[in-house]
Length: 633
Image (cartoon, rainbow, N blue to C red; front, side, top):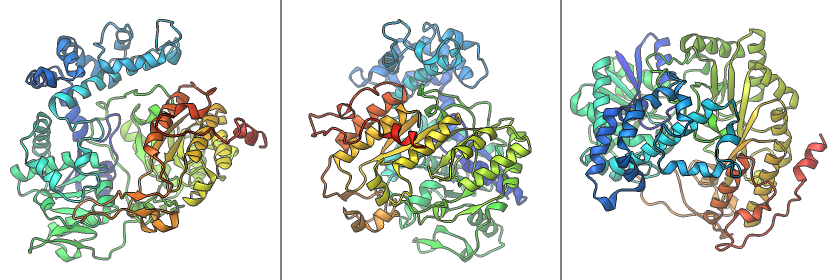
């Protein structure tokens, strides 16, 4: 039996999303014929050609003038320039033609649409060269990639405005799937006439099936923004290849479809599996081969003979983390991914810049207490590790296959004990890699450990500071304090490791004063070189989190959900503090954008907010609080 794993649009463009690589490697370790394709990348590249842009132009010209956006009008006005430059630019971003950077940097080669207005933010005090301060004399390749990325973002806007208004590079038609109580929005979209994007995806799907001739197709859906396209793929397969079976899984499925009762989705797929996919997948394959009964499927939804959705969960142990095999990228077009540079910040760029081998150091989270997190779900709750020797064996095998020595460890929170052992093993075996990952900023990460990790190849760390308020950090059971985070992050920075802080606003009972004070802490962390990057997320209450399950412990009341037959995750709540957190969000994001570019440290933080809509107090945190903490080290 042959298995084809597909990455549906949209995930990311600089490196493959790792789920198919994990599953393909696992299946091959069990002597099962397995292959994979990235249709997310293929879909975008199918438009970013001279002929692809001609199709887009035809769609744009069909719009009435009053419906054409500024991006569409600019594209039509400068179409010949776009058509003539698109293929060289793609080759440049794929690393196949670095010398083109010199022409891009002249600012005369590319058409510069509305997205290029952002360059004005970098103006070097009237120097006439808006990007000179950011890149310096030796940064010509980065400079060119940033300009080329703006150029692609302009074209993305054109695709959205002229071809399919649901399109984005990452969140494609996300609203159709995210926390949708019924399947109807997706069903209606899938029943509608296909857009040009849909037609391209249908063609790519057919090519993949004809190439591989699979018996089972796996669709891995990590985000709501990949669900619509996944079902368009499934729709094409069911119409043209009805004998092929289709299994659906992934992060979105695991989080939002756990209480599924909607049977219409099984018009498109045959199996929907929850949590780690190795054991359910083996059970499905054995069932299709006649080696086990339907009733012995594991954590898998089906539509039974009566037309009802049924969860079959034969109790069987999961595959140990030690035995899941080595991820493989064989079959994926590693030389075709686009190394983009959306932001100039050296840490922030890692998410879209470079081809990273994705690897997991441990399954689950060793802490699993944070009250905002889905701590009861398998990908958090079931914590398993592998030995440092085995991890480095896997690393060496992946480097040998891909030729790439960059690794992104995609753990929920990589454990310090394992990272220490891994670093020592890398150093002892003289394995040269560059790596980054996600951690908790706990005190175990001493300056000495940070130096060891840097010596082993660690270049960056991300972690959650969340609300930057000791009261709220304690309420959310984060297990860290602002002072501790300052010390740990400074230790990483002093070791030459870049640090990104995940930040949060709008947590239950958070006051305006606490929000302003949190921003002051963040300002000081940037100013004192503790962190180099950050992002403020709006807190969302989810049904699987401790907050969602025990709202009274956090001083809030949940808004009852409507009857749910499909996706269930986000849930609204009433906070008695009554703070308009949405009114504060823009100021937080504007401030941190400036901090990431080394701007605005001298301002009082309350000035970043719009005081016309909400009364903003001054911070009650002394402006040298973090500096004093660090001096006590």
